[in-house]
Image (cartoon, rainbow, N blue to C red; front, side):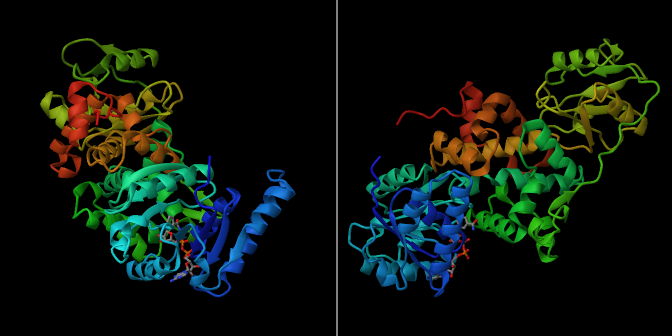
Length: 507
Ligand SMILES: NC(=O)c1ccc[n+]([C@@H]2O[C@H](COP(=O)([O-])OP(=O)(O)OC[C@H]3O[C@@H](n4cnc5c(N)ncnc54)[C@H](O)[C@@H]3O)[C@@H](O)[C@H]2O)c1
C-alpha cells in the first residue's frame, strides 16, 4: 500500500505526539517534530530511540530497522520548519483557540495540497476548521493512548472536509498497521461516545444502593467477559480525565439523559480519589495492586425450602433444569405452597413489580438474572426485594451456589446489573448508527479495538436477542420513569422486525 504522506509534521510531542511520531516513522515517513517547549522535540526523539532499543533487545526489531526509524525523525525548532510536510498532525493542549491559532499559521506555511489533521478528543473538528481559509483540507485523526498498541484511529470529517482527505488518512492509517474507522464530527466521535453506557449505568446502580462497586465489577467481568469492571476502568483512566469527559459529552448533547454523569464521580474527583495513579480511587492500591474485600461467604443452610418458579420467568425451562441439576425440591403447582421460595426471572423489571403483578408473597420472592445465565457465565446474580426474608435470601444464595459457581446477591433493581448496563450500551450503539455517525461495521471495530470489549455492542445485542434488549429497556423505563432508557429507533425497528442490529439499509 502506498503511503500518501512521505513527510509528516507532528505538533506537540507529549504522550500522543510521541506515539504518533513512532508509528509514522515505522511506516517509513520522514517525521518532523515541533513543540512549543524548546527541549520537548529532542526529548521525544530520545524517548523513541530508547523504545526502539528495547524492542531490538527483545528481538522484535533488527538493529538496522531501529537505526532506519531513528533516521526518519528530526526536530523542527520553528513551526515554519514544517513547510515541506504533506501531512501535519496536531497533538497539543486541548484548547480551541490555541489549536485554531496553530492551524492558521500552518495553513500559510504548507503547500495547498498538504493535509492538516487534529488529534482532538473532545473539540469539534468543524469548529477548529472554522478558523481556516481552506477547511476542506482539514480533518480529525483521533488516536488512542498508547498509540502504538491501540490499533484503531478515528478519521473524522468536519462539515466541509473534502472526502479525498479522509481517503488519504484512511490509506495512511493502513500503512501504519492501524484500522481506520470513519465518523461524523459529533461529540465523543465513536469510541468515547459508545463508551458512555458502561460507566454511567454502573454509577447509577451503586447510587441506588443496589450493591457495592466491587460487586458490580465482579458481575460484569464474570457474566459478560469484560477485562475490567467499570470501576476498575474508571480507576485506570483516572477521574480527572473521565469525569470531565462525562460532563462534556452530556452537555454537548444538550443534557441527553442517556449520558447523564453522576454526583459520585464529581464528589470523588473533588476529594482527590482520582484512581490508580494516586493510589486511591474506588479501590485502594498497595504497590499498584487493587485491594479488594473478600466476597460474602455462602450461607450455611441446613434445610433448603422447596422452590416454585414463576410461569412468566424468562428462560423458565433452563431455570427448572438448573434447579433440578442443583438438587432442589421443585414445586409444580400453579401457585406456590406457603413454605416455598418463589423464584422469578424478570427482564428489565424489578423483583418487587413482578411479585406484585403475580400476587406472590414478597417475603419469599427472590429474582435471578437468566438473560446472562449459561454454561459460559461464571457468576449467578440473585436479587431480593425490600420485603425478602433473610432466611429466604440465604436459602436462595446457598441453593444457587451448590455447584460451586459464584453467586452475588444484590438489592432490587430493574434489570439486575448486567441487563441494565448491557442494554444501555447496546442502545447507545444503536443510536450512534441511527444518527449515521458511523456504519455498524466501523462501530463494532472501533469499540472492540478502542475499548477492548469482548465483542461489539451490536453483536452483543444480537446474541441476547434484539427483542430481549428492547423489552429490557421498555421495562426499565416503566420501573424508573427515566427517558434515559427509551429505546433508539434503530433498536425498536430491528427488534420488532427480527433483524440483526448490524443490518444497515441499502443506500
Ligand atoms: N492522552 C490521551 O489519552 C489522549 C488520547 C487521545 C487524544 N488526546 C488528545 O491529544 C492531544 C494531546 O494530548 P497529550 O495527552 O499528548 O498531551 P500532553 O500534555 O502529553 O502533550 C502536549 C504537548 O503539546 C505541547 N504544546 C502545547 N501547546 C503547544 C503549542 N501551541 N504549540 C506547540 N506545542 C504545544 C506541550 O508542550 C506538550 O509537549 C489533546 O488534544 C488531547 O485531547 C489525548
